[in-house]
Figure (cartoon, rainbow, N blue to C red):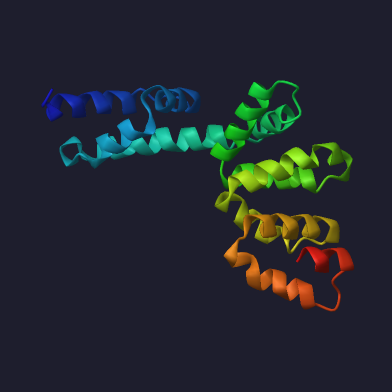
Length: 182
């Protein structure tokens, strides 16, 4: 309405309301991240708009990266419903690197072998968000997990994986499976 003085007062009231993390995240979902970015870019709304944006984004990030939520989404990758599987994939991609780390933890567990194909597919769909965690997995003590990471990095055609994979391919202590994957 062209009244930044009133808006700034409302922003202060929201900040003083001491919302909990769920309320901040719900606010972010309801109004969308673009709304908060626009608010924070308006100098006449002062630091309050930036503080509000930061509170909302922090809560939304915490919600997206919640380990329990990620575990539930990974479980839904095996659901018979295509709609549930697609929503689970989208939720894991929204979690970015935290989602990739949770998926790699599944690959690290031999007891969850039946989940591997779906997990691999999501990691490849995640693209660049999966590259960093997969590169870190190349340092894992277990060759089987390193082999998984090497194969996935190859599928992703990650340029930053080129040197680490070449080093694994020529190392004396590399197993034949890992060498082939690298």
